[in-house]
Image 1 (spheres, helix red, strand yellow):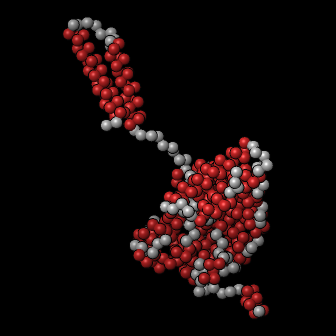
Image 2 (image 1 turned 90 degrees about the vertical axis):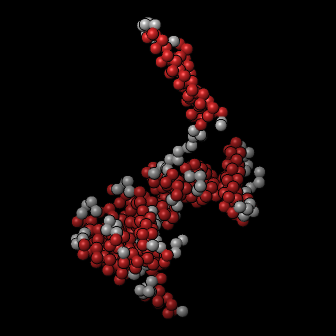
Length: 115
Length: 288
């Protein structure tokens, strides 16, 4: 068990103890039929002190904080997909010649005949 | 890579959706899957027409006009007089080098409906580009952007076109515009740095260095930016050689850091230190 978990346990016990003390104080007042004004100072200090102890313990038990990436989903994109724009596709490109329906245009045919 | 024969039909549709959402131009791959897609198209009623459009694009891209014509007719039967289908018809003519007819259809779309004008206008620009008239395409695209200034795709296309005619400063301006639209996209920062690096000169090199650093800040895994940073920093070291100033020291430190990062990545990737690229990069470095 790490140091901070011990702190956490101690904090919880101390907080419950102060709550229990407050209840005890109220019942003591009721038995001695005195008017309730405020809680005794030591209970208040114990409650507040153990609260801060708890907060400190929890912060350290929860682990280190991590940076939030502003655009994590954009980081998987590559330029190859980013630069591809469907609305500006052109069909006048090399892949055309791979198709069985390809008819070489006349300009090129003339060039071949020249040689 | 995928083995297309072994994919189940659901996997195929998932793959198509992925390609559609990511704007990937996988025309050949879609073609090789098209038979199985067609057999099972009715099992996807929600996406049927989107998939059909994807198929048409792939067919036109691979120059299978008969197939494309069949799908376009299917769409036409379901949506008669649809402007969206008309756009595909114009693309079909475009794929046949029949640009006059394609322009005719597009002009009809633009006249018929103001709201549907932007896609048709973009097609007009694409056709101009396909005809090889890059300068005219640029003029048209600038006109288009005067009207629709928030169209990111158009800005990106304009930057590509400017790069083709070697107008680097204008291309850089377009990318800056894109960065304003999407400040968190590391690819635009990287692109701008690439352009600035290509332009050369101390000032541009400084800018390239800054933008590469910004790219790495947004996405530490961007390898291209890391290598670009090394090149830009090395270039700057050459410029600052005479002045042994604080600037030179800073660039030197940056260069060292980038090199150690690259080495680390490569060690992770291969498990060995003596890779060819590292030694090539180190050979480029100017000794202090």
